[in-house]
Amino acid sequence: MPLRTIITGTGSCLPDRVLTNFDLEKMVDTTNQWIVERTGISERRIGADGEATSDIGLKAARAAMEAAGVGPEDIDLIVFATITPDQPMPATACLLQAKLGARRAAAFDISAACSGFIYGLSIADGMIRSGSARRVLLVGAEMLSRVTDWQDRSTCVLFGDGAGAVVLEGTDDTASGVEYVRIHADGTLWDMLHIPENFIRMKGNETFKVAVRTLEALVIDTLRENNLQASDITFLLPHQANERIIRATAERLGLPMERVIMNLEKVGNTSGASIPIALDEAVRSGRIKRGDRILLEAFGAGLTWGAALIKW
Ligand code: UT7
Image 1 (cartoon, rainbow, N blue to C red):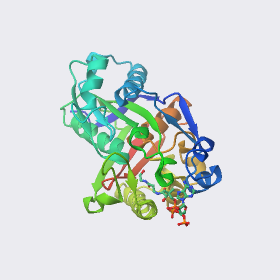
Image 2 (tube, helix red, strand yellow; image 1 turned 60 degrees about the horizontal axis):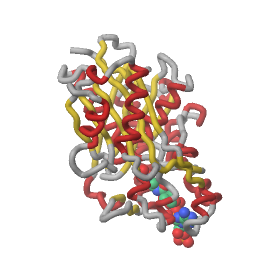
Image 3 (cartoon, rainbow, N blue to C red; image 1 turned 90 degrees about the horizontal axis):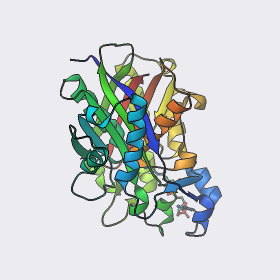
């Protein structure tokens, strides 16, 4: 059985339509200045009419598979992290499997909101290292615009649509790969961030405070459990919810912002898609290089949270 799980390809897809803060100024009582100062977000992408979560997931998956040099028949598990599935049933992973022609693959969705990618990474790593799957396609994709109340200024300025994907495989080379992954939940706080009927409702400020506290403790625990110092981390790659939350986590670690991967200014909060989109951009631009150690972390509805360490 393989000793480690490595990411052999990354991909992402952002819908074409850009919705800027200035567009939002015309829709709700807000200003570009408020949004930038309170969140760090300037614009986000919105899916086209008829464009489904599986469609953007497919584009991200194809890019990741091309980068990994694998074909549809090489995939034996598809894990799809989303809270905006095409339909409640079947799993969006199954729709993606059909679109890809990945006939050998088992397929299921996971619902862990903004922590979906870390949850999926935990599952993929466990399946690969136990010998249950050789090659896993992990996708995080969301059409949050479909569950956003465009009259609620406290939430509609935050979210965006997008998809990211990675291909994971086993290796016996312990010099690289997934070094650590941990996931957590506290369902007693389910009503901080949920979709009671059609739209996202969030106790924004309370969620903000719990997020900062939880993530600060999470990254410090992650270092301690792995006997690492902040200087051993090349990049912090956080879930892209709010620049102020990200800065607080980086400050707690003592990491300068040059070592933090952040793209929320252009994409907003894409929930389960945010980490794989930011990862793909950083890999393709050459910012992440072989040998770098990346600390991933996420916090979101559930509540759920988790962290991972990857040696590239
Ligand atoms: O993705 C996973 C989890 N999600 C998060 O981690 C998000 C967590 N929360 C946040 O990012 C922040 O709480 C928000 C960005 C949502 C809000 O920022 P805040 O600093 O917590 O503001 P607040 O909710 O305390 O609101 C401050 C003021 C309020 O007005 P009053 O009561 O002081 O008069 C709001 O009504 O800002 C007002 N406000 C706005 N003003 C202009 C709320 N939304 C807006 C808006 N434009 N879009």
